[in-house]
Image (tube, rainbow, N blue to C red):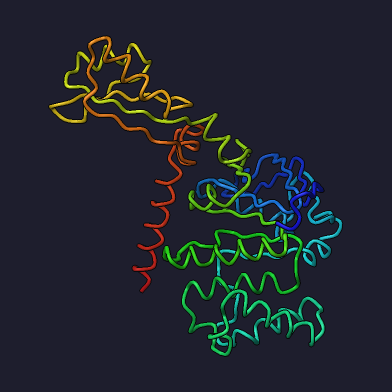
Length: 340
């Protein structure tokens, strides 16, 4: 990455709070959020629907005024200089931003003019983005004729037309098939590698955050409840899960007492399973098999699973973010089918 040695802050927020009134009651959507994002970072913002992620993004992008608190984004105060913030950032929301009946290239030219770019600069920048985001074959087509993946790549291009220092992405790959998701992220990662743009994103896809983000922030009930690298969060909050199977419930109970695990007798009539969470499962597993064997407790099957970010969320909140995301996606599909 071109700016890996930079340390200046691109986002700084202190006590950022947003409350709404609903049915005569005050609802605290975001509660005193503090955050810092360094120049050049790619930070993932995780949390279930209603956690306050999108509200936080809307405050940071000046689309929504905070009730309390302060923030500086790309060197500009979100309260005193919202126009300065908007000049320096790109924002890709959850909906498609291109005009349905407009041509792809025309949308890019119009966006460049909106940001005050000259005609020659706009056309050159649009051509550059069309090539880098592989939109050349659809550049003269109407936006409404594009596939979901092509529309999201156009959204990214519109957000990058003015070469922003900071790009906000709100659920950028929601609704895309796995191939389109992978393709979109390939383009985003390459653009970031070549330009050093800071990226701050929300996502329901835990694999995206795990593989791509240098830092992960977890939000729940309007507050940031964890902030670290994905590896550190998994290491400290979740741990590796080791599963050992035994031929009898008696052996399983004795083994659980020795290794500090818990017994699960739902595996079937012919075996009982013991599960344990440790920080070094790859080392603990062979050691436990050996020690339990020496004690006359034969392990008939064993597995070792490294933690995921969903395990982290489960450890923090007692809920599975993956299951909540799947439920939300199912609800969206049902609503779309009902409206059709």
